[in-house]
Length: 80
Image 1 (cartoon, rainbow, N blue to C red):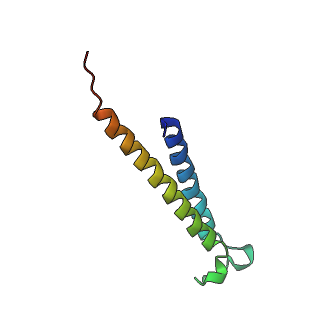
Image 2 (cartoon, rainbow, N blue to C red):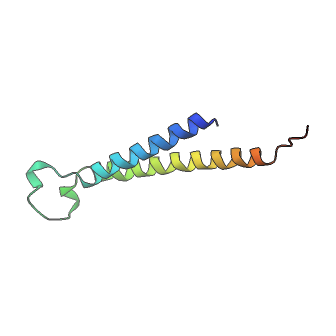
Image 3 (cartoon, rainbow, N blue to C red):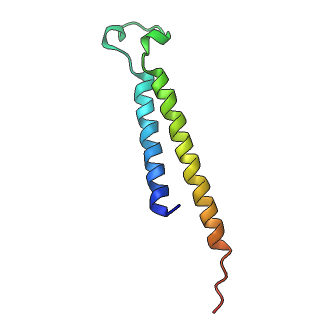
């Protein structure tokens, strides 16, 4: 994978992590005054967990690709 593709994957994973934090802790306006921690007061918590999963997969893919590419760069023969 090219460097630009790896950077795009990392930026997308960071954006998904930020979006997941918003969805995970979002409360509807009618239930914002109650302090109960039940699943009903956080209706989008499943989306937040899903976005964290996709972000983790994207980050893992980018890091594996980068480590393979950097390993190949270190073993090239630069004889003149």
